[in-house]
Image (cartoon, rainbow, N blue to C red):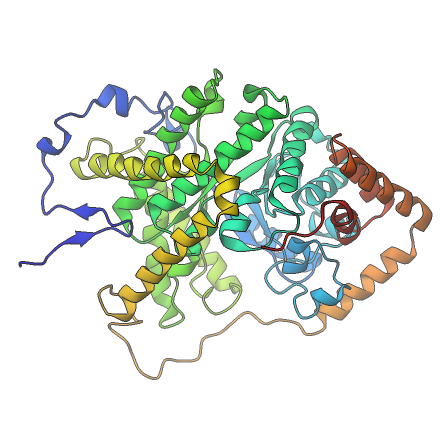
Length: 525
């Protein structure tokens, strides 16, 4: 055919055939290395999954804390090996459930956490010294981390024994997601305070999960996903260094969060290229000497934006392929979406099947027997190099603009993503891109799917519990502790210490957030 060009989502042209000539100038020792050794293209651990499977960490959170705790126990009993918690929009935005802006959103897209009592209910019966917990939370990440630490202490688990991750990636909120509260520079201050606090008190906690996932969900390409995310990471590391932190003290606890999308080989190449790029950034740009500072460890979630409401069971296959790409690319943990998530929160059946998908890949497919099994493939190595080259071009442009924060203020990343999203959607509308069940192979009269039910009594019940909580605390002590948060915000000391004492005294998530709003203001783009 005269016009048979095949391209990835990033516009990389796929040749009809790849041979050894495509790697003629390729240096395996320099560009690959061995698994567990620089530049970590082949993975961050020498044996990868032959030594230990990735953490199977299903994302869950809905309704109130008791309901989410029940789902946590269900997933652990089904063989899940780590927890991952979603929070509702009011919690993400720093509002309590009784705030007018929370109306209609309490417990809808995640669990509502207003108080220390809610965190106690969320973690009830969980072995916090054994299970790792990932919390997808950003603007209010410090508050929820402190609540988690305080509940662990109540259970007799010291802070140095708890482990997990907070997303805590504010820059991508301005770029792609929108759950920001404070202006960018004040948000970075909170992030660096978390780095410092955890290095001293919660050493096993991953202090940030620098996220490309939401950038991809907003419509970016694979190369934009890793480029914009790594540029954000550079900004965080630079801010911490500028604040006087030693890069090798905090960098080993940095982690990343990638999207698992549909183009299998480009996704594998993306994961591999991101590790190599991070090693270069940390050694050449920041002078890191601890090998752990230069290892890009990442979580993957399969692509929510790729799920279709039409013929939703087809999503089982999409999720399996995306998960397999993540495993072939060397992920450290993985969430597989429920097939019904284009319609609602996942039902128990869908959540179990999503976990079984990981377990079948891990225990039946043979892909865990040797690290990086696609290494040396003419196609995969060529594509890894090309993804890296294109990503560096974006990072160089962001550097020219003055770094990630300045580029955000100039709307650079947002405009690039908008253009990519438009082109992707247009390709579907014009039938240039096939989405099975959506624009090809459709069926008429689809059966009505079962969806996850939302309890209408949830919001008033949560508000009633919050009212009781507020009535049974020392209001004067809470007010004094919140004043201390404001005073620290006006200065330069670490914010987490007065925030922790405010939460311990009974201040709610919304009240601590409001104290910071009083000083930092609220960001309006």
